[in-house]
Length: 477
View 1: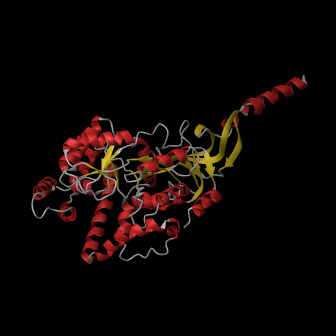
View 2: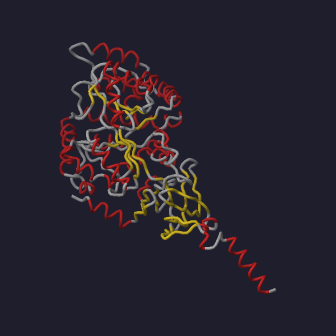
View 3: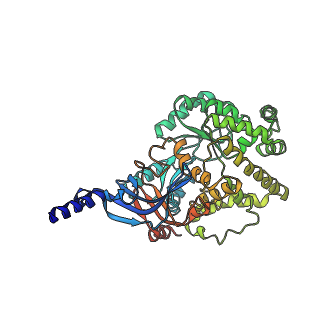
């Protein structure tokens, strides 16, 4: 009788703990004692365990429920905070074949900083990027998942090398055919020489083909027109700022009329008029229109601050210069020389303009505009370092008025949603890809805690502090 009672007790305890070792479900990695940050709700789910297999989160449960899983590798989080892998929603991999290897060496920098996905906003290295993506997927190269626009679309004699030049509306279908044949993830339009009618034709045709379209836009077009035509993402804040002016229509008409004269109204000349006429009430009404159309915006605040201070800041001792190739560092000189040539009043104007840009952020958030965190890191964009710059962008979003939770969404769930990948990425949930970052402290209390990285998990593979340091050392110049 005593033997039966003991057996019953044993079975009872075994059932309560899940199941026997042989009955447990196998996993590649189990993370225990973690505080999971739910970015959607902005809350912390305490004392959780995560089971990961084949790069997918099998389960998130309390410790007792997690006992039904077994793994060769167990990581005790010791109360650390688990967030989704970060997304940098605006970078550039570019500079031509001569800089291809140096661009490739930038990829581990993202992982070392917890950035597991990047959105390449157009450049001239797309064949190499496709190869890098295959190598990353096969585990032969350590780097983030790359979502790429491939070559930019622009007008004749475009500023950026490798752009597909579209001189007329009639050429739009062929340009988009080229991008579809390349297998790009979205369309990126640039505004160095493109005409307004061609810009809108690209947006409409891309929308008709089901292609996601983003870009800069010429000031001969209003953002309202672009949104009405199907624009999905507006890069930077210039264009939304223009739509915050009651004078937008008259100014746009004047710019269009000036294009056929000896003195066309330029971008920066127009900005001065917009600076003085920007009206928060007008802007708020337009932001609601953006939100209704699900048009996202990438503010890129950090690079503006860096570039606006090139005259006075000495970057020669920046720690991250050690990871930047000599060729890419040489491209920084163009911006530096331009900054040094600017008169003092131009510098002050841009600082005033960027202060207005910062004031737009909370109004956009309140209106429901989807905000995407992006660094604009890449060749030619001086001292905007791959990896750390995204964290600086998050700090500036909070400085501008977002809560840490809202800023964190801008670098996780929002990018996945806009790019149509929220089924697999953007949150820490069962069934999602295990792109995760373990932080020593809670980022919901202070957004700078996203920089307190203990472990990065990419597709279920864990990179501890020593591994991350080795990634940096491996690309040190």
